[in-house]
Length: 287
Image: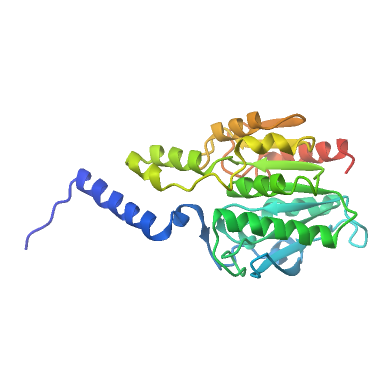
């Protein structure tokens, strides 16, 4: 029996061809969306029970979300409510632990799944996720019209959340916009990943456009304050993307460099240092 020897170069060609075929067949969405129906974290384990929420987008897809209410004074109106645009993996059960600590400090938050994630119906795309973001915001404002609100946009959610706010800027004004481990351009992050994994440059041709990314328009979100948070050891979205995003924004704005910080871990590590910093910032904004 002959043993087939495959060289490193042949493996690279084989993997490149597979990636190329995936790009052609899926329109690049496999690079962006890694949804899952699996339950990764149970709110009961965190001592909370969210309200199950269903709402519609403009395409009439049913979208699913969880509304978490303050636990310190459950019968009182929240100081503010956070609208949580999560990243490209999993579903609401994956991401809610990042903000669950806010509930004991008087804040609510609403996290939702884009179409194709978790229980939400439909197929995601850069255009569709922004449409879903607008639907989520309008739902939130219909439920809590008097309560100040904050945008929390994390990883891929940064592109979606920022573009949503830009498109609706004539209708709404959040008290604060927080971007954690984010980026402003699908093409720039795609080109960086292609370079990082030493893939052929011609793959750049198949990357999504930035029609539904915020880019230079981030400055239009002023005068809403902008807080950009990024770990300087983020291996999934390079630290430089956070710097670029901050530079695109207009005053008032802040940048938190998290020494040793990895992807989206700012409120899960660091001995509560940055939790306290965020609470202080919220207080200075009167919420």
